Length: 120
Length: 107
Image: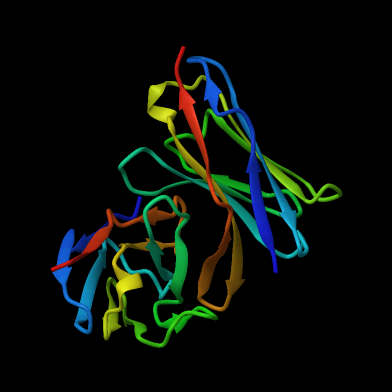
């Protein structure tokens, strides 16, 4: 049973960098896309970006200049960095696995989510 | 960006009811459409992928249909645990985008 666990600071100061790591257990990191999705308090879901296990990435253009997703296959981890944060980046951040098939992507395994608050 | 519009935003229903949620995309999706259920304080859960394929372990009372730009999620025989918020999501092109959500409430 694949499980994902987010880790990182719960409080980040404005203008600083938000850094989160997702650890994959119970399964392989290979052959999948791995994605970050966030949810501001009381609001809907926003896709941040994904990484394929070999390193290719895609980001949401609304965040592109500030976001980096990387992976360490040896540690079975992938990470999110978001620079120059503001209060608008306060959200629950989820890491998740994406399974690809013919005419579909399924975000089928999710971490429990971690709350990040941007405040001085 | 592909805009995803769900309706209704809120739906009141009773246990045993059949409910339908609609999702409309601003351009064709080639069936790259998923549905998620989210209970309060929990991560979203994948219900349907590829517009109509039921995710493993999801009860068969959930079904998805549609093509092109118009899709529906149906729940036949609503159960207590189905009262939650539902989101559609397109993965046809980046940035992947979600609908605004439909909250299914107890009538």
